[in-house]
Image (cartoon, rainbow, N blue to C red; front, side):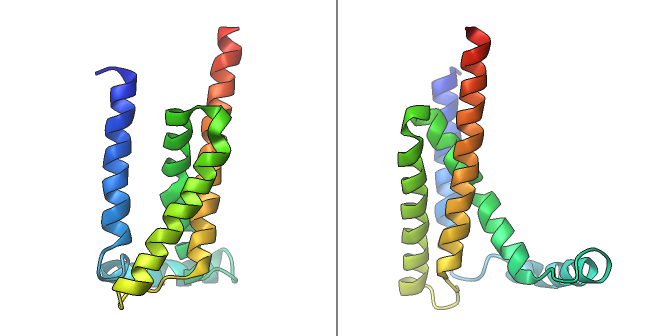
Length: 139
């Protein structure tokens, strides 16, 4: 399988995962809540007293959108990094709006859009950095 085809397959799988997770009718962490609560308590007790569930949620949202930025830059080229960043913010906003309108058990927030956009930016930075490094090696 050639590299462009592989990239398209990975992007398609990621897009399906984004839609499935984004539009699950129940909170994504529902089954994991006791484990997350124990982890938060452990972190507060032994590592960071300020640690909270909100930190876990924000971090998870950031990490969930890193592939969006990375795959977007790899697909469009580093010149269009800003468009990938805008697309990440738009997709995140659409998901949160869909949750607000259609899924009463979900809790959409503007902070989720911020976290997802930060994740997109991290992915964009990784992708642009990787492409620049590759170009320098070839030169």
